[in-house]
Image (cartoon, rainbow, N blue to C red):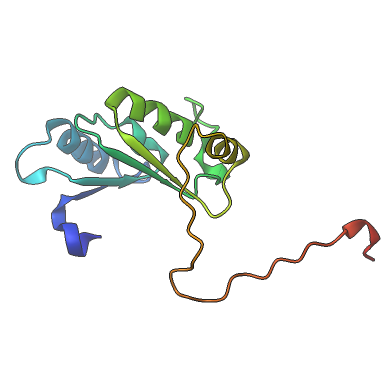
Length: 139
């Protein structure tokens, strides 16, 4: 990504030092000069940056349990927080998953969310074999 966007990519993660996090926070807040980011990549905590011109939020592997923040407080689900944040900014959200959560699958099935299915693999490799079996009778 940096090959294409260069220094216009900001990375924000709670494991960074406090100084690094403050620097990214200020760059997002000010959004001017040479430290302007076109893209910010981050963990759950990146949702709380002071965005002014948010256009797209991508939640990759949206089904993953790690999007749930349990400790320390505040407790939240980053996928749901991203959807709410998008409404505040009139932005789009892309939820990506080969195995979507039940909530997301239901919302896509009923038309609340748009649905795009990728039925061909990027690498043209064979699809994983699926075997359905009744484990009650297996020994």
